[in-house]
Image 1: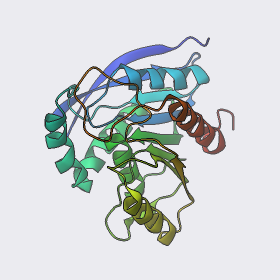
Image 2 (image 1 turned 180 degrees about the horizontal axis):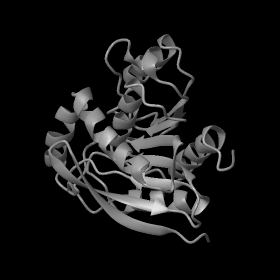
Image 3 (image 1 turned 45 degrees about the horizontal axis):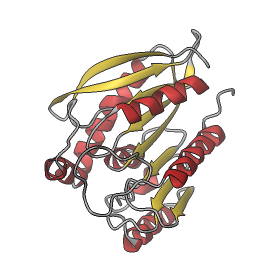
Image 4 (image 1 turned 120 degrees about the horizontal axis):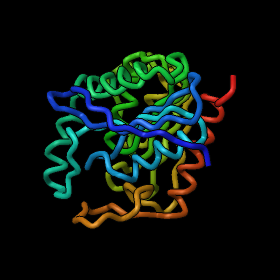
Length: 241
């Protein structure tokens, strides 16, 4: 296993002090880098481990924060934070840009080779970075089929991969169609994978908390979605270039 170095990074965004998790691969040279956006409840050890796993492969990885260090266990409290955020592209972009600035400032990061992946709310944030014209090599999202303001998807400069569960009531078929239509009309290189039988947050292991209806873990599809993300990175952000 490659030796990985991790550290906590604090930075301001959205009027909060965000607490991200930075993972660095072995060595001293510049490496391609990946932003990782968490689900609505916030950044937890599961997403921190995703950053560590990417660092083991050789990427600089930053799992960014969206809730000022908080992990919401109350679904209503989480929705009260997430829903206004999801309705405000400029706030989402502010959170994304703040994290991106931290990642770019890391000396190990190759600033010309950065990709962004995200889950749920974090996925919506990285999509907004794309719609804001940020120079990313790839955008990968799971359960984040949020459409943007008219015409702004044309500013996306990289391939977009999106995964969603077929039985996700939060991202139903109509939303899938709207997202596909937005990407296609904008001329984006896009892919949408529908995981049969999966609910919302199918990628995230169960946590000890009350959850919203339509949430459910699907271990096989969770592994497949992670492999699909790794394939996207291998294609668009290769470790040797």
